[in-house]
Image (cartoon, rainbow, N blue to C red; front, top):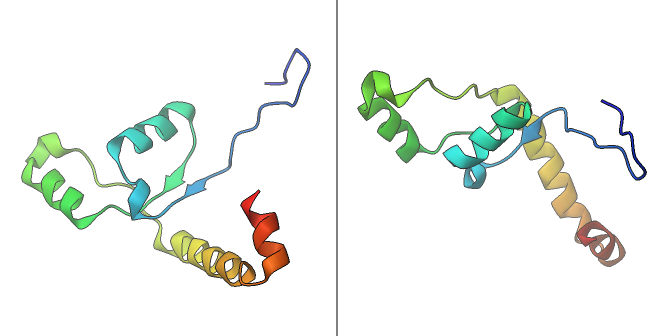
Length: 93
């Protein structure tokens, strides 16, 4: 939907790729509500808890391992670039 007022138009990411630190139910629910697909691996304790709850535990998260591998490549590249002082300052802003 185009913005009617002044300012920068609102945008939505095509997909969110995150690590296990961002795997809370709250984060996943927020992304679902906003209609943003995500690839976030589920922690082992969360998997066990979900399975112990049986049918009330819900479905497993739709985790795409191939897509997650691409996130890892980008993460390693950005960390390597941060080794260069001028780029490190630019990447933090």
